[in-house]
Amino acid sequence: MHCQPAFKLLLWTSLTFASLIPHGWGEKCTTNGQAPTVQQTQVGFGRSPKFMVVVNNKCPMCPIIDIHLKCGSFPQALVNPRLLKVLGVDDCVINSGLPLAPLQTFSFNYSHQKYLMYPKIWSFQCE
Image 1 (tube, rainbow, N blue to C red):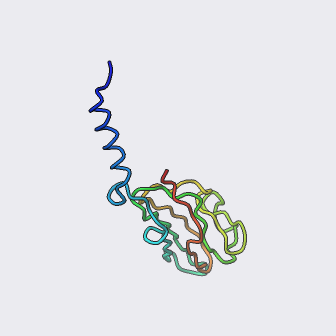
Image 2 (cartoon, rainbow, N blue to C red):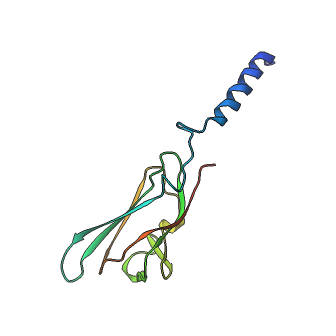
Image 3 (cartoon, rainbow, N blue to C red):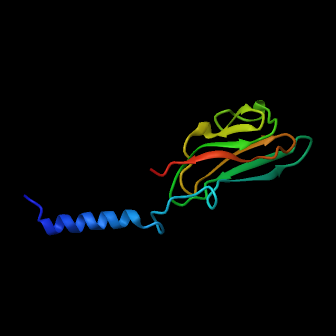
């Protein structure tokens, strides 16, 4: 069965136009508006307070991969390296660098003094 030329033209025009639309459901995320967030909440008290760290992918469309955090001198012994791996001073990677789906959160706990953690580098996987 052969496609009609008018149908081919309509299909080509629709696909081309859709790829040029910069907003809406197809919008790719940027580091300005959809950077991952890190929240820490104290969930236990005592000699060694317990903290829960939650990393959130704020992008509604794209997974984020290879999320590195500024983590000071966080000791690896406080958490499973599959959850948070210390690569060096002020460089920790979460979830073994695996993707964090759109709007997904990732969390882990540790017991110790509070270590400030912030997003350092990450990559959107929108292609």
